[in-house]
Length: 476
Image 1 (cartoon, rainbow, N blue to C red):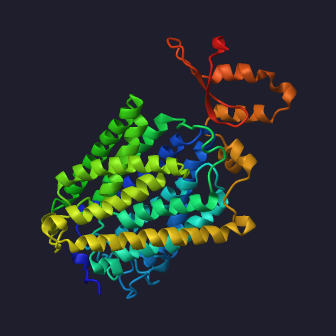
Image 2 (image 1 turned 30 degrees about the horizontal axis):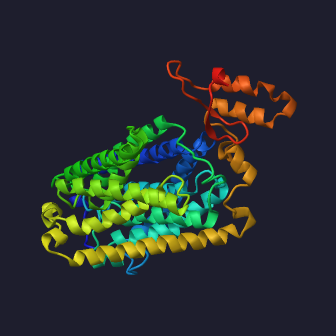
Image 3 (image 1 turned 60 degrees about the vertical axis):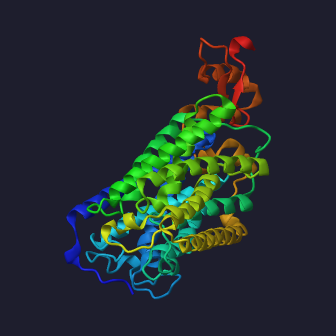
């Protein structure tokens, strides 16, 4: 049974910090959307931001209805799923939850809702540029109920079977990172590749969006990893430092690996590496010594970088590298936590733990592996089954029509444009052939060219909306 809690233990400083951390994690959701939008073609950019925000709305509703009770019930004796004692947030008020005895229960519930809302947004990235919005909204509600909530209960709820087994996962290596990564992989096996994948080489269309999204993610990750840590014991400070150290290390390693082949410094590679490093350190944030973030970040940069390369060699269309970064990074982080977990750091706030391998506790590695196998297996299997079943129902078929995929989801699914010039491109494409003589001059007006360099212009192809490089006007 969960340890009893009392309102007398509530600390206003800790409560204020968790409320602030909730706002920080909230910023990760639009940050994720911007990060994703910059990585895809411009005709799909708006749809990614929109679906991330829709995930926030849908999961907030699901969390109030029954998600919180299923994921974190302190009264359920079932080792696999919570009860419905707190459905509709009944009896969720001032009394603290056992997982956060120093803050009101309602504050803890809201804080955890941000984790739940972010996770399906991550998984949806695996189907970017080819997925319909309406089925995705329904799927998000179902996926959160059947995948996220059970895994979160196993790992964090007082009576969850992995919690009782002794798994060490501070901020979501299993329920958030591994679950979303393998959920994204299931999307690939059900929906298949994007049209043209492997035939044309696509590049991110907006590196500024990627940088902006990464900045939001980096900023919000401080609340994500440190929000649930003790302020007075110093564990929150440790979580802050390990987060930025792992992200910085992985970003530098990734840039170095890419520079070795491309001989250019890349903002995109730095952003991918930084995210991979923070993914890896998430389960370990406040339970390892600060120095451990350095090898964890370095290994994350190396492993996730080559995971992307392996996906390309195997022909897997991991559109936004969700599986390679979050799936592989999450697995690596949970496993490395079993090595670097330090019982002295964990014990700063009075928590008793045998630590990991560095404390001579080799058994912890087996527990971490069991948690990974259960989380990855459950997420992929359930995601695959739900996607397959929904895909058989015409109303809920996920993949857009080939013509809609060609024109882009921003117009076909939303009827809106992420960029004003994109609407003009579609209007030209839809016009009769006899009126298309203006295409060349239009291209020349929207193309970007450095007059000091004889470089090709970057322009949107009218026929397909792809980002392509073509000769400059006076070179044609």
